[in-house]
Length: 396
Ligand code: PMT
Image (cartoon, rainbow, N blue to C red; front, side):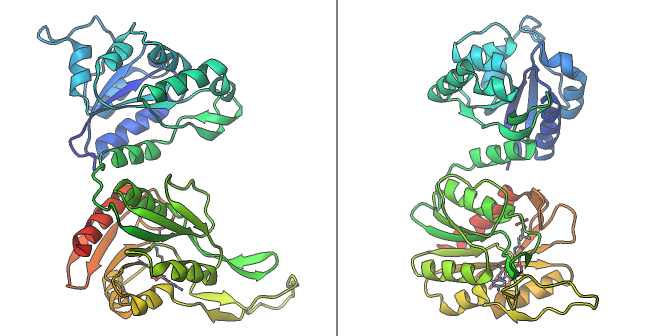
């Protein structure tokens, strides 16, 4: 998705500079053309050589060091960039930008550009809450800068709180979404399931699986970006929901079945990315006591939601997933037909960077006419976009 996109990364001086180095590497791996400007203080943390090696381009550091007499660096970079990222963005750069100050190469470039500018703040949590910083961030938002909200967690200064620079994978995800602004799914209602189900054994134990919800959430985020009206039925996960979706929380396969079935008639497309339990234990009202002998659990099959959708569908486009560990193609094709789905997305969850928990996935898409589309390893949000484009072509 970022292939040949011109991305200018402005690195200012905070400990999160190390994350920007990882971000540069990821941008390059995603095919972007990356140029870097470093501030004076950024160079106190990491030398330009690191960014030069990762971006494979000389790093810009000084307004007055003009390398080409036919060009003025800050104007040239400002025009070249399709997107500018300020990451990490310190309280200082945020304050300068909010007040229109242009006293170094980064600020002059930012003031000269017409490109969209994304800001990834990174600082101590008290600084983040400081009244001037809060005011400056609000000003930047009002001025049209796009703020990539800082994460919560452990900070290098020893505090725990808000102030961590967004992870490189999340920044990349935002960029991929940025470059997908065509609203091809406007007017369509999508129902997407994500995450695991949780099947209770007794009041203190349950059976579940390793789904993090990332694949389903990426689909919901991208479908929303492409203009769809999205309802996301989610099992218990620890990730933030995309903005603008209707969120329905469920725990068990039975609850997911109910949530999907009651909404199915009104939707145009269902995507079943959730990892639904195939069996649920017979629930014990009291905590089961430990015994010395082994334990056998009695399990009942759950309702197969995808299969039921395939049986009941009228005009809806139904998409299933298959998480496989072997004979991927064979099993995936069988699932496509057995569940009467219109499209089936197979992932071999034994591959590194595929399936459960990772930020990336490696999928093969099967349709009912025998088409097989094999995608390389990509960020889940990029995989989501490819899947949605395939759905779009067929829904038409
Ligand atoms: O959440 P992540 O960590 O990002 O991981 C992503 C993923 C691996 C969970 C996702 O890419 C994926 O493969 N989801 C489907 C997992 C799964 O349950 O696969 P399956 O082969 O067991 O089931 C086939 C299809 O039937 C799936 O669409 C599933 O949602 C559906 N199903 C299964 C059982 C059931 N009772 N009802 C169903 O609808």
